[in-house]
Length: 244
Ligand SMILES: [Zn+2]
Image 1: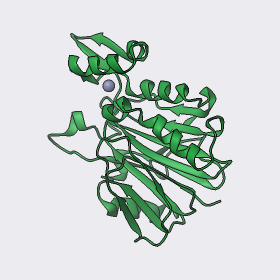
Image 2: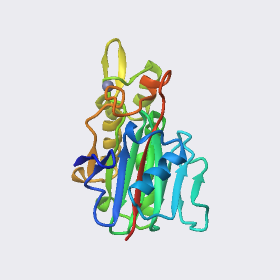
Image 3: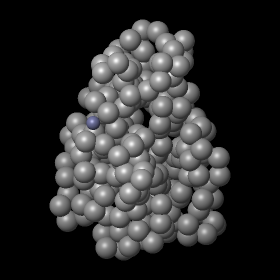
Image 4: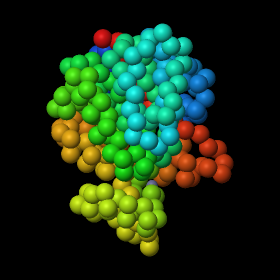
């Protein structure tokens, strides 16, 4: 279940937030997550115990890094990656999005957490499945993995070019017919549902997946690239950290 925490102004998944695990999808009210000061202010206010903050570069790839090096600086930027997993304690994994889809992963059996930034390019490259595969490399089994699909642009607002629709059709026809619908003369992509189907395809259980009912463009509690790009544009950050 997704719940709103009014103190921190974040949404969080009850599948991820269990004793020893803390995660959230921040709202516009928290500020622009592209600034590290926004992230540190938030972490200090929320009294999260942490040693490192990990920031993936985000290049619309399906690259997933494993963060192990605890000797890095307090803010560790990881180049050329859109996903990161770790088994270390007090390492805050982050991602920033505004319409693209943030996803948070957890496996309590192996004590693994993960985060990823998934736009349409990442989905086309099956990023959610790459995250699961990386977690399997460090011992996780799909049936133990919980995933939360964060606030993203809804198919109400996510119109795409015909070319893009055909790209998805070529990749997986039966999936494409489920995640695209045609209205207002254009194809619209349901990015959250696509990421859900990608998770299901590699064995993540239905009951272990949380997702949002909101559209970042319709709902002004969120930053939206498509809505705000000309005015007050920022990005929300999402995070996950463990201490067990
Ligand atoms: Zn919408």
